[in-house]
Amino acid sequence: MQEQHRAANAATRLRSAITTVKTNDLFSEAVLTLRDQSRLCFCHRVDERWAKAVGPEGKEEQGGHATSLLSCIQMFRLNSKHLDIQFEDGSRWDEALQQFPGYCS
Image (tube, rainbow, N blue to C red; front, side, top):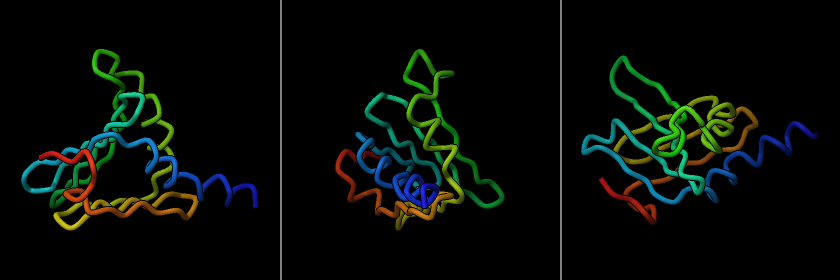
């Protein structure tokens, strides 16, 4: 039960931490900037899929909150419709990025 409670919070923690969302024009790359200025970066193209945590500008090696969230991600999909992130704990964050407050391309 403890494990389930911890995991169910990952999507909620992400939702409350995001300040801005940026994508490229093809929606194959996205960057979610979090309150501590750390960033979750996603890339999803044919034959290429990765996610990484990057610290605040000038301190990129310090992943901050993004690092703790990255370690919980089980799978993600990114396309022009949405970014869908499934966490190991069973929680899920699925949003249309272009409708997200703080979105810019």
